[in-house]
Amino acid sequence: MKLLQAVLLVIITLSAGYAAPSKREFYEIKIYEIANADQEKLIDDYLKNAYLPALHRAGISKVGVFKPVESDTAYYGKRVYVLTPFTSLEQFSSLYETLSKDKQYIAAGKNYIDAPHTNAPYIRLQSIVLKAFSYMPQLEAPVLNGAKNERVYELRSYESHTEKIHKNKVHMFNEGGEVTLFKRLAFHAVFYGEVLAGSRMPNLMYMTSFDNQASRDEHWKTFANDPEWKKLSSMPEYQNNVSKINIYLLHPAEYSDI
Image 1 (cartoon, one colour):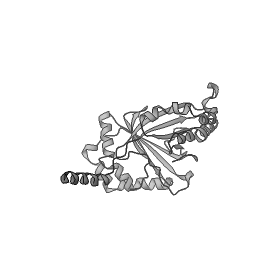
Image 2: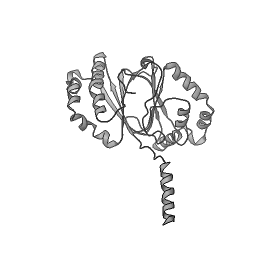
Image 3: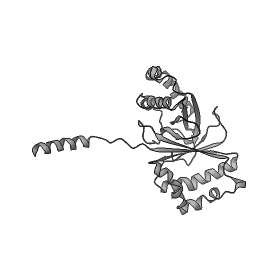
Image 4: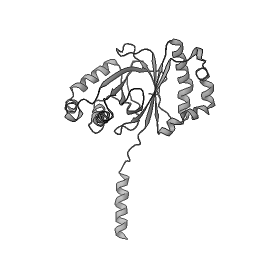
């Protein structure tokens, strides 16, 4: 009996000091392609006054809304990016039903929801679904010091030649140490995710954030010269695991939670 009690005491003691791993979130990145200022205003009004408040009521407190930095050389035209975290795919798949029952959302978003075909609020709407990396399982809203209108959020997309090669790049971020390296160098990552469904696959995406453009440029210069990165990027097992990189420099909308 005493032996059993001793064993139970050890188990309880060990359990008290053990932190269970956080459950990996899922993300949706919506990309609105818009043609003019009227569409942009309609999207902004909808997101600010209807969509984000409805998500907050549904328990999703941190939703990011971003627009391209106009001087970005990879600027592909007018877009609005919406980043939403979900605790599960079930929460994601039931969102439309949740919104359809929210009377405040329906009233506040009427101009967008009931827009006629002659005055559509966007040209096209793209949706990308991702699963968080194991080494950063949940979205983190960065703590930045710069003025909000000067902040730069960098969204990167790394495509790979095959699914197996894509998994190798994901491994490089997780077990290989890239996520840890970005953290050490204070890149203020918002999320890292494997693309589960999207127009360009296999693919991973991640977002880092900076006080301003100068800070962004300096961080990447430091990263490129870091001995740990030079060692990691030269490892034979991680060669040729990216076929294309897309870089999108964004700034947050004034009503963005992130």
